[in-house]
Image (cartoon, rainbow, N blue to C red; front, top):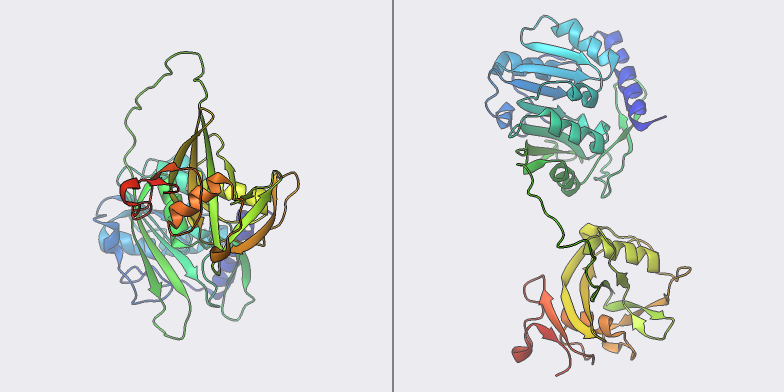
Length: 404
């Protein structure tokens, strides 16, 4: 069953149970962004919404939306996919002037709606694939409109957020009833910020809302974002001619993995000892090249956020300009192992104070750019650091690395 169908089914059962209890949550005196009261800001973070069109994403029983209508004069549209949750809302609040409840998928609804002046989701956006929800919200909000998202960070069991954009199982708890399994995107704050930035939003603040009981581990994250203005008409560009440029440079990456003061090196089939790395491919960032080469050559898994670029090393080999980008990898998963059909293998950890002879020149250049105190001989290269402080301690050879 598709993930969002699993979630719709769970919330439909939840709504059925609440309808059977005839339970309607009261309209609050203040909007709360977490499942508990008294923590965090109120509706003021939406800005002045008097007379403005506001979207409630996954409006549930509708009590938050009605509060914004009655206390702040907003015109609110609550979009809810679950039929039973929608039924709860209209059975209690259908006659509220300025309130409109819509049953349906929010991304599909926004495709045909006029842009809103503001939008918010209280604990609900995590049940929708962000790669589907966020572009729909970008297109469904006017430029400059606020988007306020309350999202799970750490659950009741102390399970913190994921570091990859993928859903995981979370339970909906209902008193005196079995829990309802769902699939939820519980993501680290930096991942939400990356996603929002990718889809046309500027993140203005991320707050962690802790449960008022010190013994409770659950944490909610509150993200304040704003829809960026539409880009102006793009400026054109064109090539000088139809002929391709003459190839004169080679661009590659080399990655330093440090574990207990030991460096990971592998042996090339031609005998040199090398850092993991290789050629940068078209349409690939340097960080992505490091991630890919590390996986292909060693089987280790990392992500771009764990790669810190050190700088570029430039030298010449037989008339070819060679550009090598050094990188430091902070975290990875797995154990290095020789991979089929790769030219470098026999991976091993070597102490920094006992580095072997026969290092590949590019790897040697990267290592001395990173640690100029390492006693490594190699041909010189011009070093342009990305991080202040690297490659600046060689006196009259500042900006270069090599033997003196």
